[in-house]
Amino acid sequence: MSDTDPEIGGDDAPNHDAADGHDESDGGNRGLSDRTAFWTSAVLALALAVGSVWLVGVRAIQFEALQRVRPTVEGGGVGTGWIQGNTEPILDWLITLVHLADVLMGVFILVMIFIHWIAFRRLGARMRAPDAPRRSDAVATDGGEKE
Amino acid sequence: MTNLDHGKFSRVTTVFHSLLALTVFLLFFTGYAVAFNAELWWLVELMGGNTGVLAVHRIAGFALIFLTAFWVFYMVLRAGGSVSLTEVLPTPGDIAAFVQDLKFAAGLAEERHPNARQFAGYSADEIPLLSYVGKGVIAIFTVELLLLMISGLLIWQKTMLIDFYNTQSVVIAFVAFHGSLGVIMVMGIMFHTFEHGFHPAFYPVEMKAFLPKSDTPEYHGEAEAGSATGIERLRLKPSWGWVTNVMGVLTIIGVVSILITSMDYGGYPISETLVFGEGSLLRTVGVNIGVLVLFIGLFLSMYGNVLRARYMRQRRQEDRSTTTATDGGTDD
View 1: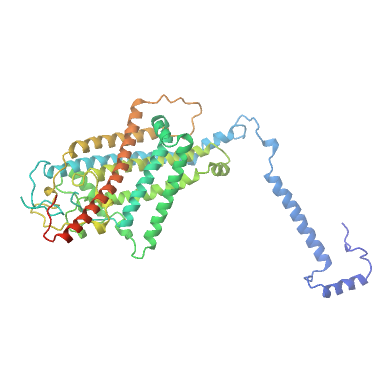
View 2: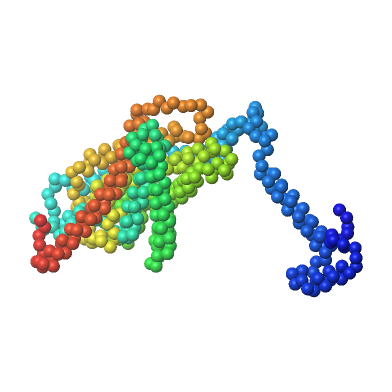
């Protein structure tokens, strides 16, 4: 790439004056000289071009690495995904933890059932038998009569 | 109508409790019909077959998220303020209440601790709003529901997990986690049913979860000498003894069966080879007994609302009769 102005017929001096005049007439020009604009555009364009191709490149399937029959899970061969998803250590550990919590809570809940069952029987024994005679001071909100 | 304890729930709470119960039971029936398919295949057929059953599960899951979110917002935003957090957090008294309950069951204590009372008999301010069991239920529910909702949402669309982990088999881990987590909830609800359905003073269902505080009559009689609660004045229902024993046995069989079955299945890691489950008659019977206990819980939740409706109607009739006859009509 040459170091000359990119403008057509860029060798004659009046053209520079015309460019200066161009500065005054064009309100959209932010005052960059042609040279700076040229290099800035070049760098930006290169970044965009490289970046876009890189972005597509890293997301593309590498056919060389796809579905290879390899003898190890580490090698990433066919069926590896299934093995890896089935042996995720953190998840394995979490599920073991939940099973442990199930057992602990289960035992505790069983204890609570037994406690309440026995307590209910004790409380029931203090209450009056179903065939006991009616009493006037039994707790009744409907105001039963004395007998 | 049996005699009533001091009311505890507001009107909104009673409705919320019943809707939550309905939702959670639906989730149990659909979820475990899938998880324990060999034992509960008939439930799958009953609830829409292989495709329908999880649709019902998801609808109920959505309802659960809505209900609990509504509840939390309502508690936080309500003008009157909510039940303060201090009433929900466990205190040393609650531990003492648990220890005393153990002693009471062993015959080493004469009374249950005030923090354990379902049947109070004292004045309302002597009894905490929540028993130690009630606080435990709230704590476990909070943690469990949160984890169940999060794990449930993660397996709602399984492609999201597959995309994240870049493997398909990992999804099963989340499904297994979700199912094992629910087991604590199932066992807890079985106990909850037994605890609030079979107290001799409240049998067949404790009304304080169904009758709003504002409608609960409070009896402020003098307790007899030597009596802390006045429970001695109450008459046992004839069927209480054998029904409670049968329910106790069924609840224990249900809890043990579901616990063992969930441990047995595990679900993760996925088996390397095809497994033909022979099934076990004993386990099938046990798991189905567990589902029966849950169904009784659902039934009692409905029955509590029926009793409330009957009671309110009875009170309306009494109001009408007292306005016409001021000399106090006798009972029919």
